[in-house]
Amino acid sequence: MKRNILFIFLMIASLGLMTGCDKDNANTSNGGILSTKKTLVCSKENTDEEGYKTLENMEVVYKGTKVLSVKSTSTSETDPSIINFTLNIGKAMADKFSEIDGIYMNYEKVENNKIKITTEVDYKKIDINQMKEKLGSLFSEEDSLYSKNDITIDEFKANNLEGYTCK
Image 1 (tube, rainbow, N blue to C red):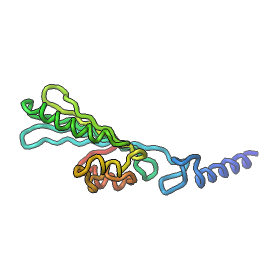
Image 2 (image 1 turned 180 degrees about the vertical axis):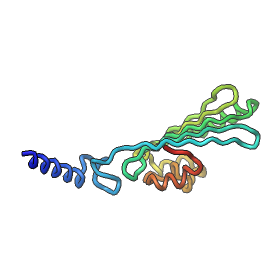
Image 3 (image 1 turned 60 degrees about the horizontal axis):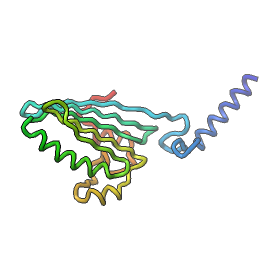
Image 4 (image 1 turned 120 degrees about the horizontal axis):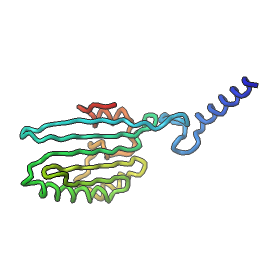
């Protein structure tokens, strides 16, 4: 009896791996139904020549080898005398990016001398053609954080996480 149950379980598991249970879990090189979402959490801290610090955090959600979404948060110290000017330029750019399906960007003032930039990219929803249209010359094929909607975790690490400490 136990042997029959084990055999049936293995058959169901094999069938699930071959067919998947929905389009997100379909059997591809990105994993079948036994593949689970994972999150890579990375951070990096820099200090510029004037002594201002920037702390960057990135959370990369992926399944199998395919990146599904990224949330990047950067908090930068800056000269308080130019913070409002910098913030206004950043907000204008963030508004442009946030018009694109699958991208959210926000600039905000934190404390007297810090700007926090939050960028979220949902690779299932991102529309590259819409991005090219909305951004015009600001769009770059080489900016791999949001320039294509099919990126592997290895590509993402190689192109975006140099100098980061990840766990």
